[in-house]
Image (cartoon, rainbow, N blue to C red; front, side, top):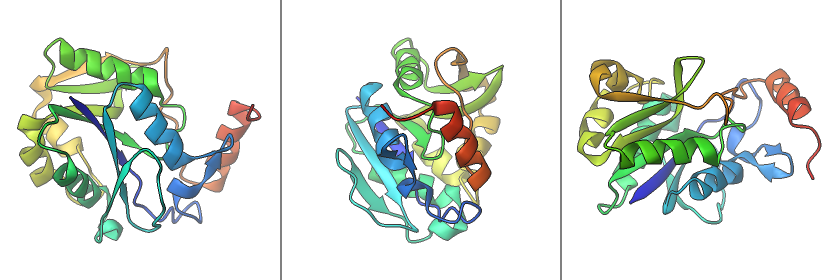
Length: 192
């Protein structure tokens, strides 16, 4: 069983508001991320919140009391909440609105073919989302510190990583500043 994990705890300090609550094409980023994970094949979705608490339909929310320390604590909090029946988790970030269900589906298919760690790539560069099998959760959590998230684990276990090209189905552009948000909104066009 695949479980989605959406990291959405930050305050969005450079953006001026928590990213989870930002509207993008008529939908909050947090809801968009949950939808992408669910439609991509995740049976359930866990959302890690911190700076802003909010109700998230279709997801289980967990609060990271240490959210200000960076993504590592949110990843640890989320992994602790993954049910024991989950074979693996698909980790996504709330601030990448053009990473959708098709990228998630590709990672889950890679797991079905035997990958225990799979990472979406764009122009050969590893980005998000990331799939990690349960057998690696403890090591991922141990290495997740500061704002690094899963990156230290992926470096330490490079031989396990299956690259999953997603250039044709997703774009990892993220929203860090008001200018980023405006540019991505312009690229997306009006909500229909």
